[in-house]
Every structure is written in C-alpha cells, then in structure tokens.
Image (cartoon, rainbow, N blue to C red; front, side):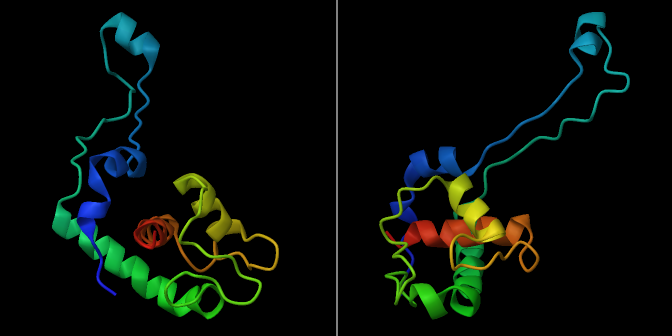
Length: 126
C-alpha cells in the first residue's frame, strides 16, 4: 500500500498539529517573564518527517490493529472499518489509549507519540 501525502493537504496539517503555550498573564502585565515557562519555537514537520511518522504508524497498525481491523482498515468480524471514520483525531487517540467495547486499551503499550503516529496512519486509510 502506498501512502499519498498529498491527500493530507494543508487543512489536515491544521487539524493534526495543535500548539499551545501558557505564560503567566500577571508577568506579561508586569512586563517581566520571571518564572514564566520558556516558549519554544515550533516548526511544522517536513514532508519527510511526516512520511516517517506515517510509516511508523503503519508498522504499529500492522502489529497491533490489523488483526481485528484488517490490514487495510476495512474491519473484520466485529471490528469496525477505519476507512470512513468520522471521529476526530483526539477521539481516535482516546479510543486507542483507553479502548472501546471489545477493543482493549493500548495506553500502556503506546505512548502519546506512538498514538499520534497511529492516528496519522489511520487518516491515510480513507
């Protein structure tokens, strides 16, 4: 199966990467940054980085998900198809982490980065 990065498009980048930073308002009003967390510059991933994350997600999918959801995500038996999933990225990540119905939780197996990579790969199945 080939992965088409063009299919993700710019709109998907907006949905995939949410960046937040907290700075003490009182420090800003006082004109100081003492005690405020350091805000690091965030750069959107390159196509090569994104491709690597998707391929990593594909490997996790093959080892943990394809047994029930099928190698192409169409679903097998009681497991639903992931190809036309209307869930948000956050909802998919939560389902992977905590499980749902007969699906076991994978939060003890995969960390947040691994789950992010799985979600990226699942989004290519559409």
